[in-house]
Length: 502
Image (cartoon, rainbow, N blue to C red):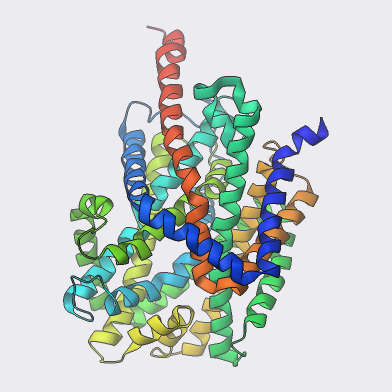
């Protein structure tokens, strides 16, 4: 019985460690293998990522405003466990975290320097495109993906009394088969997607922490130091994970937001304030007016290669992250209505993300366009260091760099901390207090995956494996939408009617 209960843990760990061993002993073959899978998926399934993600956004808006909006994620009398500030802090740290810091300056500058074929490089049109697509990649769509997954888990576990597992969300579709091989398969795929999704972010975070330490303290730019950073931070996030959700993760998440707000406020005041406000207003208008066309356009006649490299990667990345973020966000969202939950996830983190890109991306474009300093070339040459190069144009540049390294480190810890908790929970039959041994196992494993992927192919290998891991999970998310509608309709038609005094 014990072996059966641990089947998801054993199977998913064996698969993951096999890939880790493959990458450790023959890293060049792992790179070739991941490249071939990536090429096939991008060439044949890019449209599926775009169409599916747009469906998730429409579905999230329907949930927020439709007939199910007053259904509570828990019993009718339950109140939320966390304050709004604690809730938003934790879901933002888990949902964006390291990636936002990594790409906040680098992405707009990369699009400005290397836009699609139909735009001139370093032109005004390229600058507007750069900001608009940075908003697009980090805006409503990723949070819509998270809403589908986290809402399903929260509803079926807190309101229907089922185990907080992704397989539980499919009871309306497959019934008791969720306890058999079909359900176990769903949970194993969720673990696989989570490990490679989070490992991508850990790899990015370690690279940027290393770049910051190189810029500030002159740390040699060698891969062994990046791996050492991963090892050190692994120790801290495992310790944090062991302290539990209400202590370690919440405290660190609140610290994240405070540091983030300090950086935002300083850069806004010390930087080109009016220029930043103009960038924010114009980009928000362009983003909202072009939302549908951007959501469904792969640019097959021109710009297709650019779309494959950026938009398709991002959509796959968010989908790969969805099991982890979904389970974590569900665990902190008990007691909220569907409307409160959906609007909270769609609007608050997205607005903070837009502010971050406007301030940091806008400041970088101001230096490039108005001051004539070629910071964009730096972003293309080394994505991980450009944030720290930006700080050199500001007063207290070294202090800002140190603060950014601290922010990255805390984000690294909270993301990995949350993922360790979620992976242990997923492989413990949905136990909200999973064994310490499983937390240790997954904490070490996800750091090993990030390290091996960095050694075997750097940033490219991280991106390729993230896209591959997301493919099967896209179908699972689409089926989850159907399952949720079926469950909500059943509640409104039969259970609500039964208790209606009229």
